[in-house]
Image 1: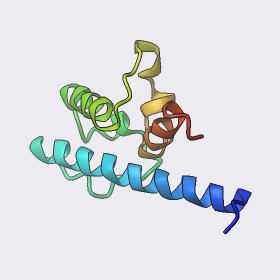
Image 2: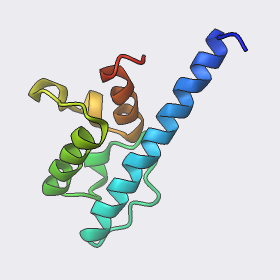
Image 3: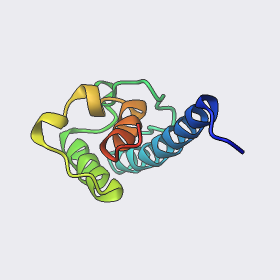
Length: 100
């Protein structure tokens, strides 16, 4: 089957959805440790603004993210535009790996 723009876009979307699900699972685990339920967190909700995880939880999430996806982050890359939502975090993985 030849590659088309549609098939490439579908593959990228599938990867973003899968990565976002992994990230959400980690956020749910961190929130549970803090006594919160993050199971309803949507892909475009600003994670810090939800109050589901505290600053230590955010640091834990960033460390897990770097290790899991093997993408070291610079200080400048740790911002709301790259890491603010599940969707942005998932897209940023692919961007850092040169896949988008």
